[in-house]
Length: 198
Image 1 (cartoon, rainbow, N blue to C red):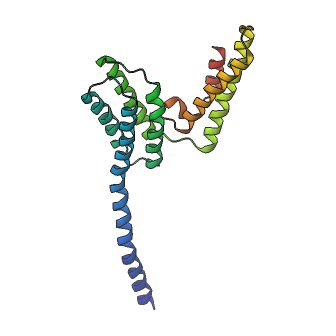
Image 2 (cartoon, helix red, strand yellow; image 1 turned 135 degrees about the horizontal axis):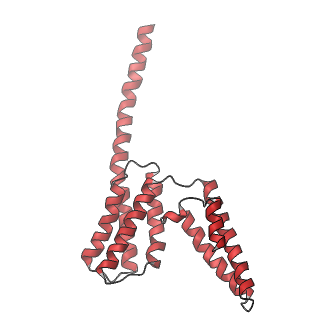
Image 3 (cartoon, one colour; image 1 turned 90 degrees about the horizontal axis):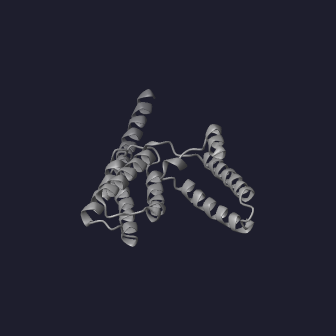
């Protein structure tokens, strides 16, 4: 009886090993493919809204992102992080002031490296934390709109509220795909107080 029990366990283990090794192989080989898909989406975005950079600079920029990703291939939620990079980059790129100056390009390259490394290495927000951050931005924009109308009573309230809604919409989008570090964690009470004082 014990012999049959051990024999059966050995057969089950032997049957599972190939499946486990195939799964591990799939994961490790899938990661470079996921990374290249994200980089492809970034290149497409750069083509749709081109910067006045030579081809060599564009390649350097994409290679900088590739290098930052490759340092974190063992990160938890790897695929989710690449999705944030892919979607968040489009918003970021559209708002980026591009220049032909090499020094400005180097600043942009350093920024995207920092943003990518931070995204790949920082704990992602939970659903509750994202909601808390949305609520905080809503509170800040309501506070700012009231101050604005009190300080400048000649302003049209509807115009102020439309502007507030547009800014909040942008904030909410960035919270959903937080490429920028400022959207990666809720604000502390101290930070909220400092912002309101200013």
